[in-house]
Image 1 (cartoon, rainbow, N blue to C red):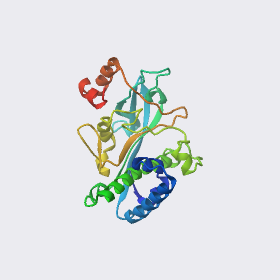
Image 2: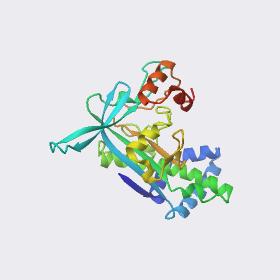
Image 3: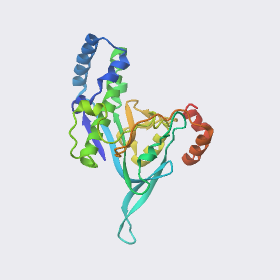
Image 4: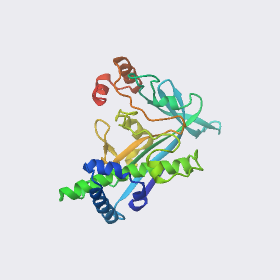
Length: 271
């Protein structure tokens, strides 16, 4: 499913904490000035540029540290709907610190579950149309980053309450959503629990992220830079964690499951 958002629809979902952090601003008066400036810029951009999302909900089950995903399709021979395996998403498991050593696959049932896969991005013009003014380029780029994240927030809300509907009666303020008081998690590719950015190649094969304008670099980084991709997991016990350093044993096993040379993954994972 493709969704296009107006900038004005996403402004309430912006997490300004990260915007101020990017500017290294701490004084409250300066935050208020920058907030007013940002809102004026967003109003100027609204209608000229848009933000895009692609999402799909799959049947899923865990197989050790992998997440197997399926689409239900009509069998042309028997005329009955059957689950058809789409892909296997290999996950990494914590190996350092204190137990439990977690893996995202732990939050998916080995028998029957569901999972959402998504990507969000901005019109590429938000990153290319302001090259003539260094300050305006930086301002617009940082706002574009926030808009891509805000689109993921808004999409996740719609998924929980409408498209998937596992939290139809959710009644959270946006402030509550921004501190993740909702059921489930939304781990993003490249973040601590899903650190391998090359997983974007697999998500692109599944979701066709090109349909919303996302292109991938050789390492799996997304262009436009202001893009987010990842999973949506509904398990109420799911929580975020950091994979951290992994051992050579897991690297070799992960390389086998990813069908990618270990030395390539070592570079991508900065091991």
